[in-house]
Length: 447
Ligand code: FUB
Image 1 (cartoon, protein in one colour):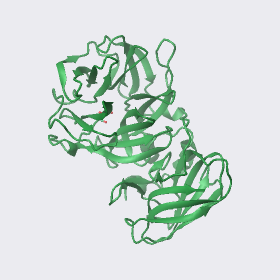
Image 2 (image 1 turned 90 degrees about the horizontal axis):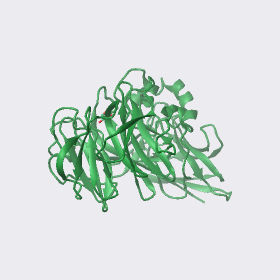
Image 3 (image 1 turned 30 degrees about the vertical axis):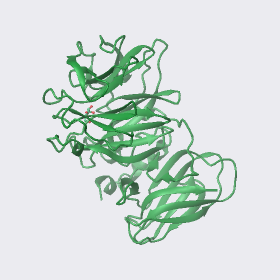
Image 4 (image 1 turned 60 degrees about the vertical axis):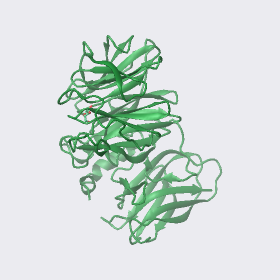
């Protein structure tokens, strides 16, 4: 049992306060793991959110792999587990240091640029954004010097097809990547001067003919600053903050995308850890907020994550097979690889909930069938299906039957009262106090 879980009871009061907030601020985006260094990428109609991963028992940085989450509405996120790790690089000499990555697509291939702290920047390639990612070089793409200099790569492709990789702390470097995206031409160039208040974590992109470099600024706490330029090679003019530093957090690290007509800035905070303890550990969590530009291309300041409200940019279709590890809020739950592949929701205990936002039940009233693929050692658990909140209307209850163990999945069904319109859907878990109730793979509604 992990530390988050053992302290969950103690945090009950905090949870009572946070649960209602979760439907609004949704800070952080992911609650089942500690995630950091968001690198969002839009591919087709989906956001692929790659993150680093702070281990549950991390004190300082303890980071072994890179995670992937996807969403089509910005509020419900599906966990795809680790898509790469330090083990993806045979040349990695350390057993820690899977730091801030970024993935970019070119010509149907997906390139993941990964700093191995103190060991250079490597690149992995995949035919799909879900991976598998493999190392085509067998050596670092860039490796200048100890210790912080070669971290936090960001890659962007200009309209003329030239790709650039920028990185570094406390300096910013860049190189021109070749079209193969796994080699570069020319020298590594040091950006001079470095944007004011620059710390690390550059995120470069182009919009309306202007070049942007967002970055973790000031320390510590870190905010998110940004600079603009008329050229990808600078000079860069510091413009100010996207998010001001605040004592409510410590580190930060930007990722910016346009999606469904809106712009979002992603970053990180310690708000999940704060539910557990006021003590500092490097156990961070990714958040996001809508961001707006002024007419001249400058960026309006975004308030601290908790003070923003993330609205869904789409509704969620429940009439299909849904992976249970898709959620807007699931504090206290964990996700883990299943023995036969895929991911499941684990560590389900009495009183916990899993929420999806903006679920579209359609306009036709009438009963529905709820199907859930679950694994349970001894049954003795119930899954209540409710609307809007843990106290909201009860659509029905699935009495979980034993399946032969927590690795043996069986489909179980119950009838639900019909629901219409768009609501939050809240699954409430009931069963023996302190017991691990069941593992959950997927579910589906049928009319
Ligand atoms: O997450 C490890 C390091 O902390 C990142 O590479 C930096 O940007 C900072 O977030």
